[in-house]
Length: 468
Image 1: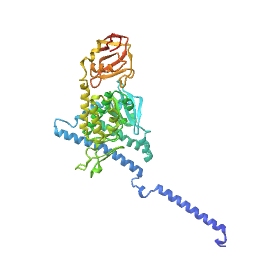
Image 2 (image 1 turned 90 degrees about the vertical axis):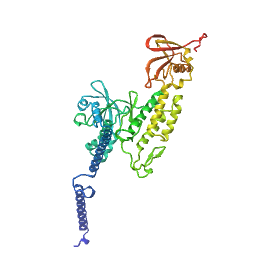
Image 3 (image 1 turned 135 degrees about the vertical axis):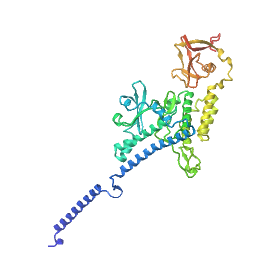
Image 4 (image 1 turned 90 degrees about the horizontal axis):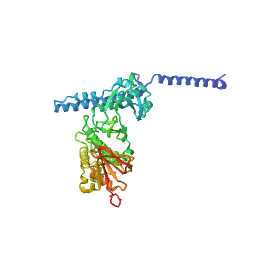
């Protein structure tokens, strides 16, 4: 009997052949997984994912080392120019201020959630002495951690990688000291005590642009002036020219009336290398600028111009022109034109801002006012009105009344005379950050009480009974 004459035998042999091939292929497949070859084969047992993670960790460490090297080199040059200086002076000064460490942090608790972002979570905490601070730590549910886990599936490695942003921010805050940068009050990098790296910062309130737009022009100008002073410092900082790559209002807070930079993890101290001018391109949504490639093949000034134009498009455009006093409007117009076209350096821009501040504080806009403008008011010095009848006005310091910044009683009298409902105003010893007086305008009051720090100005009444 032959196989061709017996269909059953033929079927049996084919099934046996198929089964053998299946077993062989499965063994071959699983053998590949157990003993990789080609790109996945590494004598040290590293997978490509692990190798990429280690490479990124190495690059972050090198970035931190570069910050230290750059700082030390610049400090060495300063010591060479002035032998009386010491490279450790600034470090000792910083260490004296950052006194909150792991031991202090282990015993405090957060009292409020302030916010979170791609990388960090920010909590409000109260220290034993009653001081409120902001605590920054890794956001384990943040975008950076999630993307890292998707790529590497390594929770410990990803936590270390994401923590580098906090470590970088600590280094920058230690080396960059300015009134418009939040103060680093302490840090801890002990996982056993605080669960990972934690920074302790001066607490501020998140910048609210909508609220800022409704504030008096003087306060909006203060924010822009502080920003320009900050950018001038960053251009000539101890680390060289620093660029804020993620330049957004959310990177800033308000503390004691001042704008302060609070996020520095995306800052860069390196200006791009170039071969020709076209390599020095600054691109923005509505404008592009090309800078010159220097003989040293560096786009010198690119960090400075990037910061300045971002200040123009995120801050100046919204805060400076609106309701600017007539005296400084021409100066504001020049600032808007020069920064919008990047025609001036940050040093020249700061000079222009200081000129606006001087003009605003000087009271030059009152020179043409007749001295007799206050004669229409009876002055009661050492008195304060109570049970006031308030009215609201635009850009007031008090949302429930009309409180405005004035240079003197003459300017206050001019404002009151222009408000039909105003019958009196008072001046106290309280002043704004520019030294100008705060005047409270009202339509009436019940009676007066003694107050050595106050004076009340009442509009005189004509014989007809009409207010002058």
